[in-house]
Amino acid sequence: MKNENVIKFGSINSIEGYSYLALVFIAMPMKYLFAVPMAVKVVGMIHGILFILFCYYLVKAWQEAEWSVGDSTLFFIASLIPFGTFFTKKSIASYELKSSI
Image 1: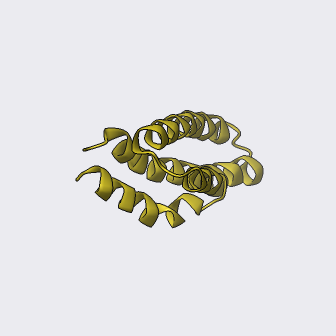
Image 2 (image 1 turned 120 degrees about the vertical axis):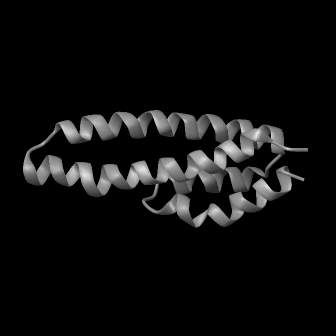
């Protein structure tokens, strides 16, 4: 049974991770080192929307694919740490493989 929400979650996981890195390592230094606060406003808004989508697809994939509470919690906590979402890619890829069978 192919679960589209698991595949969408895998994609949004990576995109949200990149947006978080852009916010922390590009936009925030631009704001504080070069006095360009608009960078944080724009990148922060994009990251916020992506984080909401990340949470939405996490819940949908968790419900439909019947993930364990531990894995779902790990995915959420990893999203709060810079580079965290990239450490969970292998686990998400295994769920994507299971969902495509």
